[in-house]
Image 1 (tube, rainbow, N blue to C red):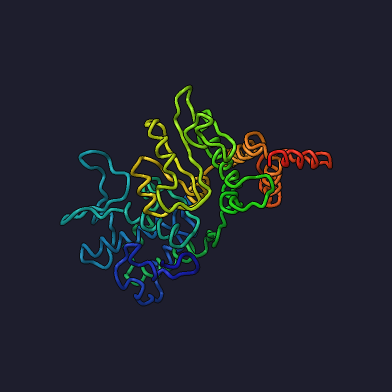
Image 2: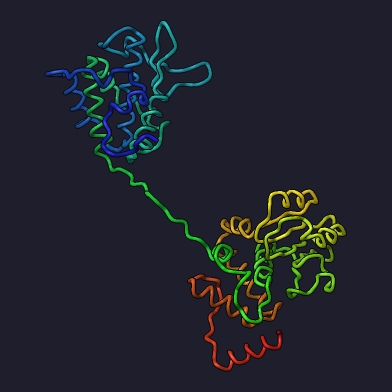
Length: 384
């Protein structure tokens, strides 16, 4: 990638500005009255409220080089007499500066202005207004300067371009680009990436419960138009009248059925029961959530119109959620652990893990009393 910004010379952008090859190698012109007059005009007579003048003047110089080359001349005493500006086309008036030619199409200003503006703003990272239409229509205010540019010798035009480059580009404030911007990982995404689910070490919380809670929270936030039903882990879905571990309804119609497997799936046989059950609800969106899956197994399951979402897939999806939606997902996990799974220790682990990692789940944190701890222990023992 080409360097951007800094104190780069005009020579680095000769082609981009539409200037001819070798333009930057022209020798200095000693005792140049035309050059002095042009610099004085810019200093004392330039319209003061037109901050787009650097790109506009560079475009005038490039236009002069193009027109003079087309006419086989190195200067013109009066360009407006020799090549009158185009005033209209068959369709509309012309407001920009297009110099006519007897032997060819007009030499137009607008593309050269666009190029100069691009170099100044993008390549050199300098502050410069972006208003090409307004700028090129302002050319009559620069009529005397334009005539001076055409009376200059090739060397004078190079020196004048260098002057404009220094005072109108290099001396302007440079925009500072951030070298690195770290993306803030949001709370539900952080949970999916970092929180253990298979080996939580929480007494009274059965395996798979945490991932089922996360799945419940995910769909609660992602599908608020559905009524979600779920159940405790290790309770067969058939006993509860459900198809999957988390089902979503619109009225009496099942719209979503999600099976949760807190493991690595290597073949479709692992979820054979779910594949069989979902056949009875052909219009429902069928999803399997797991830790990972082989490509062969994913393809085999997908052939049955079932979507597989790994924990990594969920994390990538959640990464684009806004903060309130992320918090809603975490509230769903908390609800599942406390009200569905009825694991006080699991809910306590979840909340403390969030607190430890400084994640804002939107909870009201309540200090646990000794009596609360004793009650929680008794509840979890009963669950065992």
